Length: 154
Image (tube, rainbow, N blue to C red; front, side, top):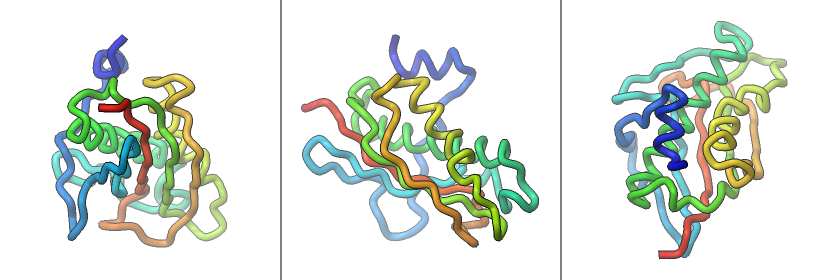
């Protein structure tokens, strides 16, 4: 089954390609590896989840934020590859959770993104991962995630 069809069946859709909010490229391909710049939980340029997990946001709010970041990663991949089915595997995910002091459940928050990648790509969607806390993220975002993905050869 095609990845975009799976997304639709899950009731999800790709947001429009996020515009860089600074001087950087949304992605950079080096051989078969695609490096995706950090993505925040924005849809159509509007930040969807703002706040501090463990303070004014729940773990579930953070997971929703992480899932939106993952959808933006997929939008960048689609722009880079033209077809999400050309993704061979997710290699690494580095993620940040804007969280309260003493909050230690960053991995649970980022599961919102990892679960989506796994549901779409199976074992190939499960990447090596880092989930760390931050006191601030751009625009008050609850999460920011960057990824390294291996694509099929051209």
